[in-house]
Image (cartoon, rainbow over all chains, first blue to last red; front, side, top):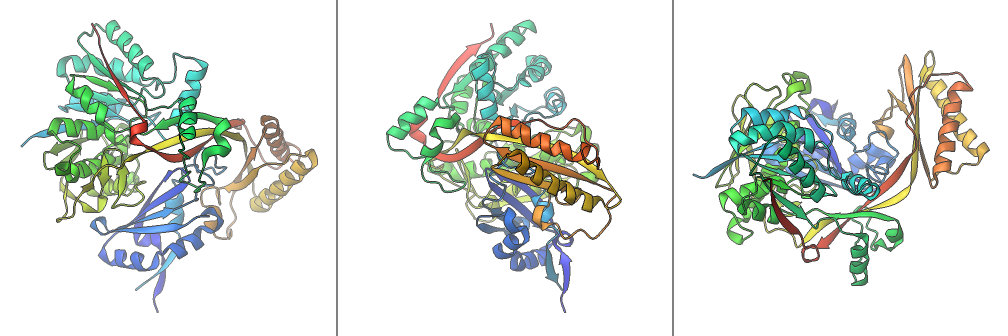
Length: 106
Length: 458
């Protein structure tokens, strides 16, 4: 049976904002991990992970040149840095929060 | 082959000043570029200018120039900055005053204006039929907040920067010049690229590379997953990029500085806030960040080259990013810390206390958020149920209200939970603040005529 691991064992993350959009760059450590995250880190799973903190669509783009995914989450920052009530106004820790999501690894 | 060397000297406001001063003194770059503006900064500067007409620019420009101009006198590098903010003319005035005091002559300054639109102009454009759809929430028309607008500014491209350099500017001072264009301007000017079909691939490369430089020391390891191993990040070097006429470059940093330049640290910046990686929209061109190859070629030296045959860029968009800031009520916050044992139960009780008190005093917030620092303040609903006994927990109450009176009242009720119930401690809590919400939209390029004025320190 495939074992469950946190994304932090497979990749690094870096997140930022533009308005109410939170972007997470998820950077796999190697080709094998890139294949795993490409298959399992889906818009639906990301949305489930963030629950009501991400209210809009999630789109995921592939960056094979640097073995990374660009995860773009809409209406994801409580209205955006200037009006959100969240402590992390620009969502710099959204990437860290994603690293706690579990996926199946061989 | 023609080449140009440029350093990324600032990531925002405020930022460390010494890495910029260091690069001016110790390196052989031809250009220093300074980005000081985050998304909301223009609205803040606009408000400062409304109160005092001689404000509204980034004050850091003064200590920076005081330390950098003496090096300029000898080396004659060129500088591009968006420190002008909401008041580039006044910013130039202050720099001229400073330069005279330092005995500097012959410094030519290009001043770019026209990026911030008076509210009256927004009304005119509305009357012409532009609706300014909100790209955050898809609201189709800005009507609802028209009366609350406080600032409106356009992210302009490098056109006027190129013109200023062509007219011999040593220092270009702009307002909401896009972070990216601070670099793309000098690349295009020095390497002879035009906004024409033959150049979009190279301009695209410049757009992607500029993205690696615009956050200054961040891409040299100061904002990095590798931070724990970055050598001496407290005096991190500014990134230095040597770009050739094919749009390929080598990124390094100042000799002897702290920090770390590695394909890994640049990769972290390549993924940062780009949305669609194949269509990184910037005013000077659309970059394709997936067509870029990053490769370590030596200690603190990374080569940025073209990957395969994929085009690195497409023609610049017909519209420009347009941010409208509008007043949107008030936020108040209060932070306290509860000690254990049973800190979590105590914190939950404080949360109940707070909501009951709001009911009793009749404050009806627009929105509230109570979070526990040490548990879910950053992770929100992704935090798993607490299954450990924390020594202590911070509680943060955040309240959004329509009026400042309600914001004050709500904060007072939050404070009561510690001194009425005696469960924690709190000092120096933040006060109420006025909220300016951003309404991100687009505007046709032709509706934003910019202006260049040249001045010289005699």
